[in-house]
Length: 308
Image (tube, rainbow, N blue to C red; front, side, top):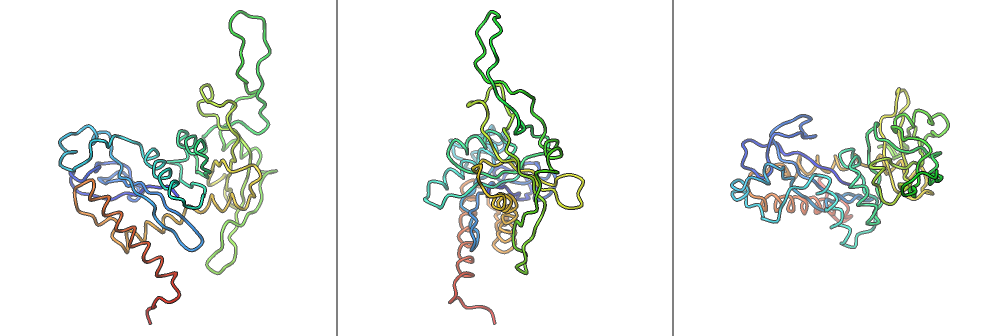
């Protein structure tokens, strides 16, 4: 799972701090932003890596960089760029392969999706309703030569334009929706919702995309009962024969990273770092990660002592 979290700060000397939007604050505030990737399994979760987001004005300020001991090789990278690098690094550790999950901040980034796909990495990433795709009935054909002067067109053309995924889902929901159990509740009873599953082709950079036509992906939408429109959308490059139940469970699994952040901050002091160095921030997140892993192993150990 890929996400980022904010660390409210006073002043302007802590590396990466500035007034910027933080989901933690729910508004623009003076804070640092940390990007992280977490492994999720049946027996628990584990942060795998952290990266401190460094805004462009910080990258260009030599004086502040020197005071914060930011290495010279650190350059400006967007949060999706930092996130995909963390995923690629973790993928080289011999961990069991698993799809990458993330919210709209990552799913709306077409370069990130393309980079993951090119690396053979599966994903289920949230996207916004206005995202445009080609409907499953779209046909791509090379235009018939017209005899006009100039180089003949060799690039297949769609027989219709793309449409917003919110419009597509609204058009096909009546015939494509089904009830899916996406996780077990506290009492063990399955929790269900209405989902729509459609095979589509993303329409981003359609004149420049390589290969062309764009690859097929799953478009997943959750349309909760009583709602006038879908509540969430996802794009996924999982195989065409993937069971709907698996797609729905993966799409709705991202909430676990919020529990990680809650424990890492509320119990382990992730947001208590008061130093002002780049390497110090990364040392702090590493130690908090080790503490999180220790508590997870203790919880799973049948011989561990429990409070009376």
